Image (tube, rainbow over all chains, first blue to last red):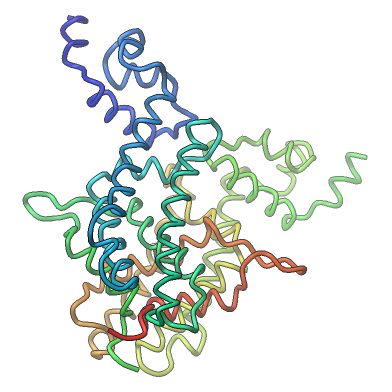
Length: 199
Length: 199
């Protein structure tokens, strides 16, 4: 039975179990014992797949980071005016966050106590910085309001986007949950056009 | 010495130490032993002031909630068009969050495992609902965009505001930190007018 169970486990399925446990208990609060229980396989079976929990963290946040950095290589992120690029990246960031929800949730909760965590934080800052640079370029083009501090606005924009991990739940087939497409559009409209019709 | 130390402690100073420890360790992860060590007074001295850690939590989140609900009683929250009331409440919410940063941080991190936590969550939802009602009234007046789901927009607005507890640091006397007044104004401008100058 143990052998059969081990055989059904792939690095992929182990990763998704690990991410769920990390998000529930916190990375610091998760032991190999917790992972073993949640996966229903022995610790030695886990070590058959990965070197330890740090490798699982690195793989999990890599998946989130690959999704985010991938956006910057898409044509929409470099085509047209800077403000259009920023809107594109904003919409796609919301989409990646929804598609990779547990992985991005983990990335956003990383604290920096271990080497893998510090690496994740640094890569995340790098992504934020790339978006901040686009925002600055859009401001330099005169396409963003001059009466708003761009660094502050960038932080607020990320604050709004990242808050999704706290409350967004995918729409179930039978209704309920949130319409993802509408959500991405609402973030872009709110941030760039504002909620008011007129003043 | 113990007597002298106990005498310098007031419920106020004990509360501020408790809030700091709750925010650092999480409410669940904080024992009376931790509080005793952080305050530098014995557990029995703490029990001289409060019945236990649940009372400290209740007092701490009450301070945040009193600040937030107080906004709704201010003239600006009921004067003029609904959209102006919403903008007023948004600006003041940011200001209260900055003024009572550790208390609001604790309120936003409450999980609902104990009676005091569930009470705090319920009161917080009540505040959110009051603001959501104002948003709906503003939409009914035709002052908010019709192509945006108001419930979603309200969640995003709170997501943006609440993200401040993660990165806002008060401006020090010698510079550094964030300009609070400008921050409140930036949140209102971003959410209601948007970042774009034109399209």
